[in-house]
Amino acid sequence: MIALNILAVAIGIGLFFTLFLSQSLGLAAGGLVVPGYVALQLTDPLSVLVTLFAALLTFFIVRVIASFTVIYGRRQTIIMILTGYLIAGLLDIFMGNLIVWAELEMVGATGEGEAQVAALESSFMMHVMETNIIGYIIPGLIAIWFDRQGVLQTISGLAVTAVLVRLALIVIMPEALAVYEAQQVFSMPGW
Image (cartoon, rainbow, N blue to C red):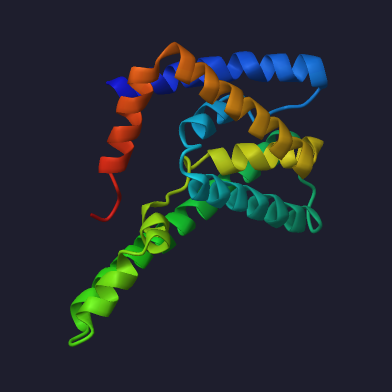
């Protein structure tokens, strides 16, 4: 219940800051709901990077498709979101298989158990295994704005807006944010 409430608040604050950024600087933040989602994941920079990678890959794939066929308007929007959805799903499967591979390595080896436990418990490997993509449609929404206003402008607008949303959440509802983050830590996929 708390997670839904803080997500709704984060999206609402994101809408406000997106409007402000758009009107003052003329920059969009990668979609109306994207800054709220990204703000809640700023403590997990690898998830943000994986999501931006998926958006960039979506952008380039649709650009290649557009060189062979006419894509514009609603068709382009749907193709961007669908491609982003598929890439997010594939990355999610890949990262899930990484967890399974690590578990199989732990079970399959004999005699080297201590070394593998140490490798598995390394902070980077644990962080990679905890990483997940931020929503399935978020990469597509970001890719739409990569196409409309440029990659650097979109990433800049998204970074500024997500940080402002995060700061507003810290000021407005710090306890709910702490509870949300604790829930995220204990809901690690694959464990």
